[in-house]
Figure 1 (tube, rainbow, N blue to C red):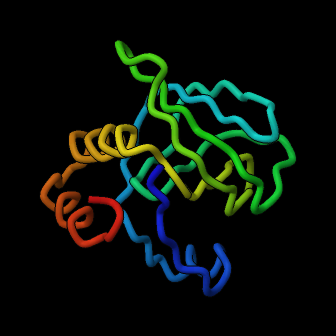
Figure 2 (cartoon, rainbow, N blue to C red):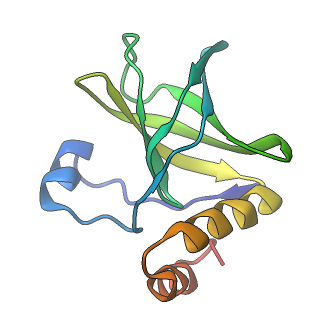
Length: 135
């Protein structure tokens, strides 16, 4: 497992307001599964995705800091790309997940998904190369 280092100062809302995201987001219109406390939610699409987390359209009374897993379902790739995380924001039927750990193989898949779907792959490469533990 690769543990993803995070800043802990301040709240998720403060970080969203300041807009200091660590990684670029992409729109990635594929299905996913969210597992929280043993309950699996089938999602038609991922609202946005980055190497550090994702935004999912789901509303089921989630709480901040709940641990979860997200599986990105890709055609021709079973069982998909699985990452572990925690819920950092719940607003208006959307849940923000911050990724906390991922296997090295799934990290490579996640990085490639972001790189190949980003409008500026060179920017993604730069972001990945400057983040310890995510190379």
